[in-house]
Length: 604
Image (cartoon, rainbow, N blue to C red; front, side):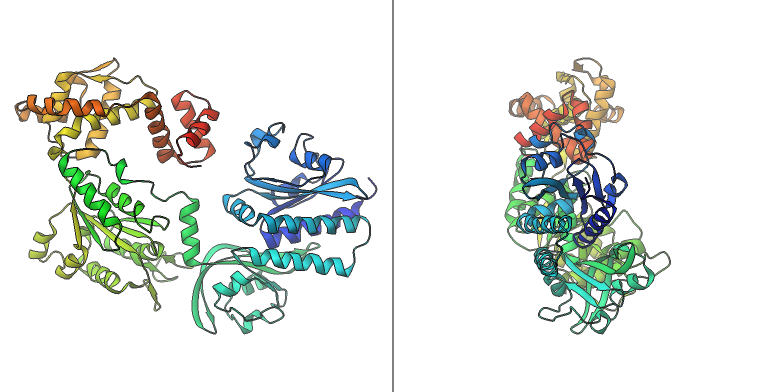
């Protein structure tokens, strides 16, 4: 088509690059012959190639109607696309280009990440309005009627969209003059009401990292910075990129988010929020039920909780359940194992460090767990293993919520709720001067004792059957049954490793038992040996006591399927590859897995 000559295509490419730079989305333009004439990012190398005649781009051109596809590969409109199976887009918005009532082509905004998809879906009206204005601009260019009034209209529309985006956006020219600063950026910088456009950014934010991009032409991503503004020093997360026009560098663009919002969003997107209601803690023994009742009532408060229990009793499950039922359930849940790292590393893990604080400190520094858990819950596992020096720093953080990064001078605040856990006798450690008494009383506000498995005899057989069924389904194995002698052995054994050891024993059984019945010789040697050391006594009454309750633990095939899929998602995540692996393990189709996830409300 004569309209799409070289100069027109170059103009389209400039428009696509400018919009892509500001919106941080890929942009592509297709002419009515289905040839791609402009593209950014992944689509830049596809310019000149044909798009599928069954694609949404072709459909929008035929119908003359815009389309927003928020779930590619599932949407009916994508069902006939020849490349649907290979598509990695998370969302795309297309708008037809018309001239005198005839199709001219189609323009699209393309998302490849969940962050981009989230922005487009939540501001869809503004993005639709903008892409419509962009389409008008392209049509005007095709008609050679590109006038100043239309440019201003498109610029105003772009400004409206930029202001509607939650993420801060600042653009400067090659001299550091501010071209654009949306409301979100002004809020992050504490400059609400200050008009920055037309001013030198260095006059207001002297150490803004975007100015370095202008000088070095080097982009950066996800950098945590601390800058000076008229109101003081502020901290935020920043990404900067070069702004180009016609192949020349004309400035730079910075995206900025408050550190608190960035961390909260990172936890939400990564699906790291704990989905652990109290009912997911299996067991009906009186001692456990009392602990669960106490945990549930504790969730409504903001008091510090101390979970006391042996290793393997499920202290983290209780911590996650308390967080889940609290008002902070949508905030981050951050875990620190105080016994898993040396003191120096634990110090930096808890409180973070500034750039250059020590050899090996990463550029830009690193936030500590107290910062990451702000407005959420911080779980200090095995807190008794902290050194006395670190205990002193913990006490100050717990008392007034103030922390200071290693190598830093700025005092930061954290409003994290603390849940601590230990398998040691803290009172005895206090008497032996191994644990600070003031910290002990600060942590021991609401103590909850989690009973060991040997005090929950009525739960042993139901729990063993639960884990046996779960791992059998994941391993595509038939589910074996326990003979009476095996049940008696399980009930007599003390289970020093508690729930963790019991679950490991079920996996061992699935490797040794190839038939339909679990016999004593299928059990781990330490279990049978431990039973022999007890003399095999006192099993009859316990077995009778457990029998009727064990029947109540039997669940239907659909329930086991639900638990198997949920366990697979917990272990493998929610990616498409993970769901495909789960489908292979369970011997069902990938479509069935997606359907079951929706039916059982297991997340995306």
